[in-house]
Image (cartoon, rainbow, N blue to C red):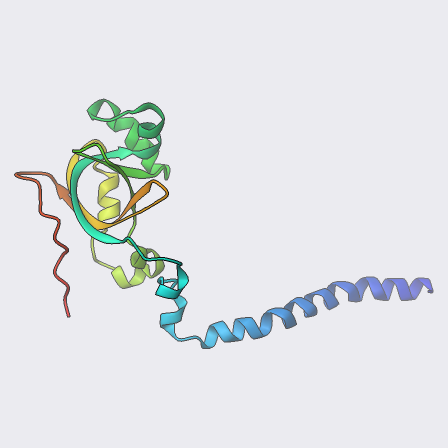
Length: 174
């Protein structure tokens, strides 16, 4: 091959690679663009999971904790409030340590995470919890457990007062 041909090949190789990537991605991108809005969310379907879902509504009373410091060192209470607040501000997980010493990781509402604009001007209970480290709260949401890991997808939270709340789910608007 002549020197001129090598230069031409060197110039064309990146363009050929870009064309190959565009052709390979094209039909998939077009299919995604034509998909109905409901398909864009990764909301679970029964066929997505083997076995049954164990998701159920609960209301629990307990202390909001910095998950890491509680798991590693057992730290709770007002003496740990400043450290816990800094940790969750840096995206360390939060948990709720219930009055019967069960620990649940607190998860943001899944639909809110997938479509935040739909929740504009609606208070976020997950964000509220970030400011309530070391506080005792009544937290309602959907509890799940798998392989020993407990999690609550938060639906509502308020500072605890009076008797512990009943575990009834919130009324749904039709």
